[in-house]
Length: 183
Image (cartoon, rainbow, N blue to C red; front, side, top):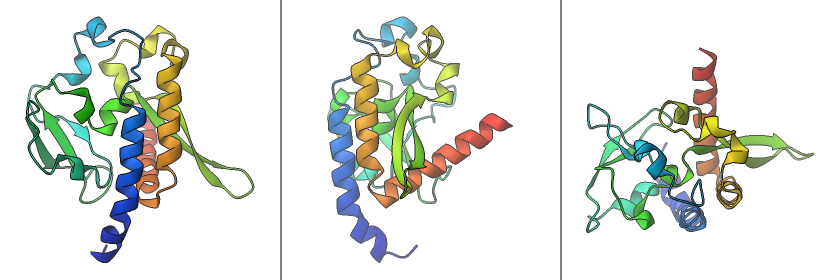
């Protein structure tokens, strides 16, 4: 895509991302520190040290400069959209600097189009990638999560679906995850 459209889309996307990140600044999957149950498995590096969390479009803006106490790298990651980025860190970070994908995990947003005008809606669901590392999904599914966390995830999703760039990212990611589950 050309340079002008992303430049014009960026301010609105950043506002939506900032609002979504703020909604998820405090709520966590459990009322207590869920990382104590699994030794923070979702924050641990794999054997390559290259795994990380996929950033939403334009989210790399929040990581333009070094953040004291939060060493990280941004790497290209085209698994969802061309030009995508992922953030690779050392597994410990100040909560206020976590990417949106970290704040959502182990949930994700399922996008549906319904109603007479096919408006997009975002619902929280368990991220299929979480089953391999997180003990929470098998402890009762979505009802096992703190209601405040599920509600915050859905409120964040409601903000994100109103931005076409962020909606496209969520829909393409969902299609890829659904396809991988069918294989």
